[in-house]
Length: 381
Image (cartoon, rainbow, N blue to C red):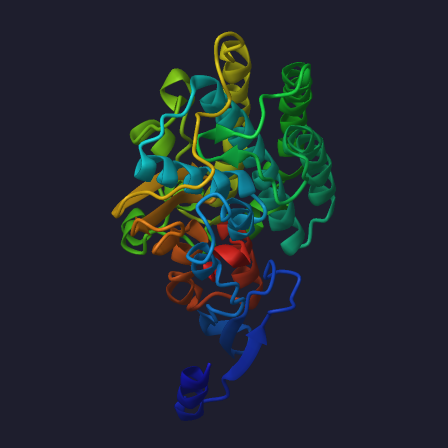
């Protein structure tokens, strides 16, 4: 902030320096962008990373291995199941714990349902940020149905906490798979209606197509992941390309941006990725329902209450709703991790905001920022 202020004093012309956020409805949480404009045109926009200061990684070094699990929810409060799973997997790798197959299926069910819930927020708020309120109401309604199922599974509607080191907290409740199946029967036709309402709406397309395109080369260079990477035409998904758990058991497609209404990697492509991934998650869920093991299985391995892994280090990678989420943990033989590090998609995509924002109109900056779907705690942990 101080550096930008100094440069702004040296800048010629009548450039205006404004704070976009942290309490702005289009910045999604306490996110602050320091924006320099020449009239309606943005000269540059610099993310003020570090505004939140939740210190979630340092907390991980002060808790026991089991005790840190509830804190992982806060890393991505919109898609907390993934933050749970990534941490569980890194400790399992550190300790050499094998997860039972039933628990692996429970994790897939929880995570793909959570991906649907997260993407519903992403597409709903994306539309609202540029002036279309009705799609958010539709998306929130569907997310509430998903939340009903997640609440029945883990007891919470926002900071889900279902994963455990070695498995999950409980098997799916009796009748839960039938409820999930009915939800999917309801969701798939609704997505056709949703696409008629907004995805194919010409006004909406014009607000997103050819706006803020990110090339494949740029996406890779800036470390983008998940839907933001795939929208730029990079065909990469950890669930398929570096499979973990029981994902090899499922048949699904990985949507990739092709510039269907404009330039490859533009805001519209990023929108399409999330809409299509909702349907692919539904496809995975149907297969998981069909293959869910019901006999001779357990939902968690036998794990000591007090974990003290020998001095070692491990890393895990999972495909979160916001792309690759990685945990790196160093053990020193004590009851707490010596070092906990989380790599998240939201932090990576913030690095490209300054480059892409140059020359955008102010209203297009809002469309761009909405399209990358960031959550604040993933940016500053």
